[in-house]
Image (cartoon, rainbow, N blue to C red):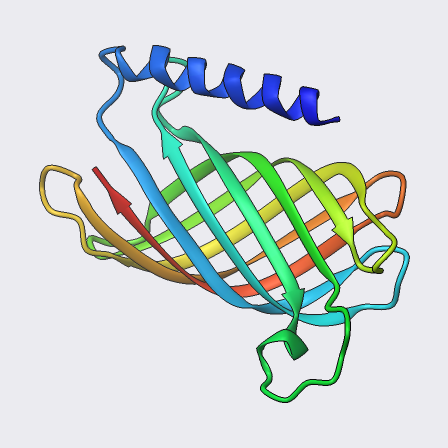
Length: 183
């Protein structure tokens, strides 16, 4: 499993370097989100804090849909509480590849939606360490602070949902605040 992830990441890095040198490349977006939601595997839903870091880039294949690679981490909220007596805090981590489309509602407001594929590593129990593969979908609305060169910040609020098709059927749901800087 680790070899598959290494090969996938190296292939993705090579694709980014190739597409970066193409004329269609006008910038790279880097961002992340923080929020709350629920996680589960072979377990009942657990309330969790959710976080992600991501980057996106333009390709010569499409000007309207940008590929976005995200690293997702979600863990039981009790981890953040001082004095918790829990010995183990369930968590999920994963990596996703989504196609993201963004529309400007007006000059300063945008709506963004995305969908794609995800690999989720389920750690909902202390003896569980299972990779699951599935789909992910998201929607965000927010403010666009970019200048006339299309560089700058975007800030919004939204949600993301991911679920897997086999093994422990891991899934998560997140409400979050997202920030992104477009170079």
